[in-house]
Image 1: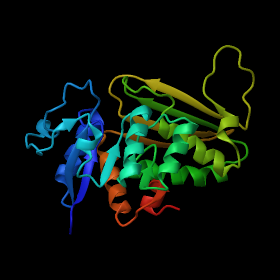
Image 2: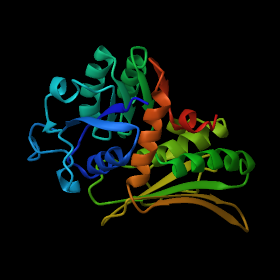
Image 3: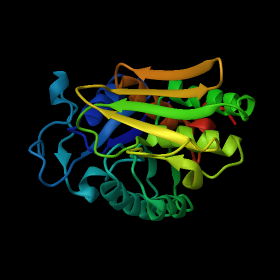
Image 4: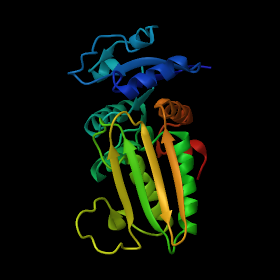
Length: 268
């Protein structure tokens, strides 16, 4: 079997290092490129140096150099960086696995357009467990459509720059779709002061940021006399890395198209 040739964006970051390690430990993949921002102090260093077994791949800010031998790019960076990578990958037929969150509608549209030129898995959370949780939420929402208030609580580390998390928003979208609602219309993202009685059709969000929390998400279906909570808690980013590699394997043999983790895991 020919190894999948993978490049990693944000290679010196927390998630980037986890991806480099996961690729290094995979029998069917090889790291061929590592990207980071021009200001990164890691430029020029070996992407796997922290593992004690160099990969022979230097971290670079130059897309042409970093992606010269790549068939896939795994990107968990920030929207502005991912969109630059997206343009290059679409032009050169490099497949993408995008775990970046915080895209606006224009960014999402750009990803959809690029998928007409290359194959892309785009998901706010690559964890297998989270995506199974999303399927459970879809089922639960249909059963709790009347008489239950829905609240989504998420917690992440102090360094996360977007809120609510992409995963929390995806949970809200899945629930809203199951109920025939539009999250843009029923989502409540802040409460302060005299807010009045809760709108029973709303989906509330609460955000916590602190310490080194990898990622906790809980959805409450609160009725009169009972409350059902569906939770997913991450203790390590390794689950996101393993999901990303699974997504790369899914794209093998696909040249174009936009997919998500439901497609990867057969949850449709």
